[in-house]
Image (cartoon, rainbow over all chains, first blue to last red; front, side, top):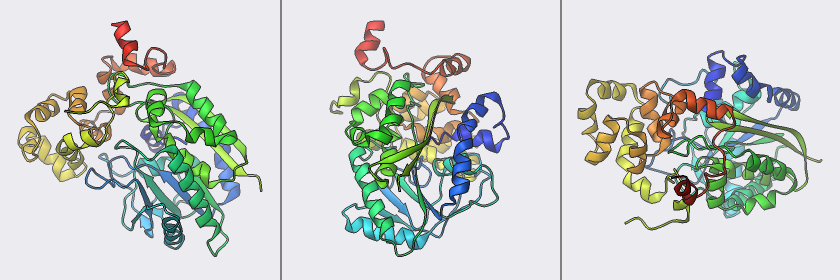
Amino acid sequence: MSHVPAIGAALDNGKSGEPYWKKVFDGFEKSKEWIRKLKPDVILLVYNDHAVAFSLDIIPTFALGCAAEFPVADEGWGPRPVPKVIGHPELAAHIAQSVILDEFDLTVVNKMEVDHGLTVPLSLMYGQPKEWPCPVIPLAVNVVVYPPPTGNRCYHLGRALRKAIRSYDKDLRVVVFGTGGMSHQLQGPRAGFINSKFDRSFLARMTRDPKALTRITHLELLREAGSEGIELVMWLIMRGALDEKVKEVHRFYHVPASNTAVGHLILENLK
Amino acid sequence: MKKANDYDDIPGTTVFDAQRSRQGYHLNMFCMSLMKPENRAAFKEGERVYLDRYPMTEAQKQAVLGREWNRMISLGGNIYYLAKLFFNDQKSFQHVAAIMTGSTQEEYAAMMLKGGRPPKGNRYLSDWKKRG
């Protein structure tokens, strides 16, 4: 699902009922109901940091948040008025150990602030609660400095995450969020680029043929989904964490939210 | 010299790769410094003096002072870093996107409402050359 900062601002400033924004929020009504009933024990939230927790000093490709809590960052206009994010250090440590031994050399982060990339998807799914209903394990992916990890690498990391979660000694209901996208370009004379045809095809293939999506090159993503649309690789981590065969519970697509196409998909394992 | 990359033929697009990250390191780190209130205050007090704390090139400093967004990008700026500068100016992504595309904010917002800039005619440098 998308993480456009303006969506967070619309909610925080009480504008979610305005016609422009209502079209976006309406697409998540069914999702809110779905997650309310599902009551996950933990959310593994795949997202990207936007030059907030990580600067050009250190650029980890995959960084797993293992802290007990993650403060909401001040991105320049004060922190978003949302609850702080509570982690799940025990499961996160287990995932880190499992995944690294599975040959994915991720970075362990024990102190980190989280930006709109993480909090906007939570707001879309839960609205404005006093506290987030469950712990969240952030998995930050570099998509700011080119090249991000390939879609194929992301998909396989998802497979490793699935194995890690399955091998945890407590039986927890874990929901994986893949965030970012869809097509958009925020910079230069081509800003405002949107490719609905590409996006719709991507959404359809997420369910039926994710392996085809892992073969999309970065060049194609940049050209067809825009320079910032390349964040779509993060969706493939989520997809890799699911079974090969999945059921599509909900699909939503809308243009525009500010500069961006909004895409949203809920998938469930069949059993 | 920057070597040619396969993504150099996407029109109106600058891919922020490792070389640009190096070229724009101080420019971007200056922008990031504006996330702290005390730095925002110091920058407001004297932009030029504040910029001189950073070993940026003169061209980068001039681009910042003139708020020339496309120029900053061509000198190694990255949009997520530049955002700290335009947020400090109380400007939105859409405001700056409109400037970078040479349109008014109204024209730009109208384009987005109509579905955005279409892929057709905007995929290759040659598409834009044909258009002149």
